Image (cartoon, rainbow, N blue to C red; front, side, top):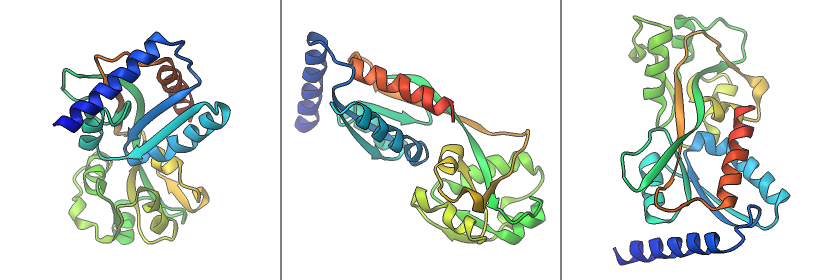
Length: 228
């Protein structure tokens, strides 16, 4: 409890110094914690910002939503991205981006029928089953996800599409994780008018105004992500 209190006091002191100083939008430290999918997309954009503005120091961590909320509350992270706005009086939340779920199959030219998906099998990940049930349940009504055999599993967000690219199965992932995958020619996203779209929320401490460097970074990232 004492350590958390000390961290919050240090964070509050930093915020006060920023308000009393010139608050340079291109200089200072920023800590950001995100889920894996959007994190894969944002990390190179954050590096671009540091190259463009050498006075910035950006620390980026990957974490699940509960840990992100706790990091912001404890002052370990200035900013966080979560898939649900937390109901906490000390946290402010605003929409950051919209991210559809994608059905991703090997680029083998086959039609994405239910029978073909069953033949391929599913490449699972920590959120894979829930994402697949949400998307496939709408695109293939009446079919049971339990009929599809499991072909593999990994908890590394950057590796989930590797077995798909090798023809070992299909998966369901958020779009930003798919966009960040290097071997785009080896995979195919099945397009459909039926979509499942999640909103990502930016969170930060409600009682502490964001310094100019945070505000500028957030607006820049929103513009860049929106253009992808």
